[in-house]
Length: 209
Image (cartoon, rainbow, N blue to C red):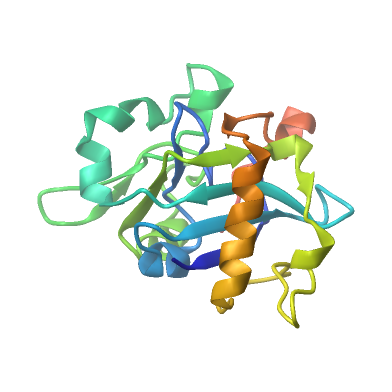
């Protein structure tokens, strides 16, 4: 059991996608998606722009790892395909990749595409790993990110907080203590809207990852 922590730079409900009763990390963070295995935990830290104090956007246990091809075809995750004509949740669907007969990656219109079509830069970055992390045990706080207890900011010299990249070199004691603390909260599922949804929609430009 390992713990991966990283900063959620853009909390739109896209990466991670906490909707439909399942939390998925299907885009961005290819290194984490490549290395994380069933039973590992992911801790998404709120960005400084979204929280002035060290806070958690979400925590999830990795319960399943799928490939992009399996994710695209799986009937359980069809609701995570984005739609420009549906709800705001559907707008930020993360089930966006499939391959054509030649094996070329196709990116459907989504938060990771450009207004003119697919975004080659995001395709290249996202598909560095074909892994899609699926978590059924999760809590997503979004705009109501909860403070990280002080003991995890300095746990015998280890800290969960990061500014860039990701971290997974935590002691077994740190991981067990963090998971025990999370489980003690008794919180589950989607608990608040994404932080960026609190901003004007004019600022919701599709990012270049």
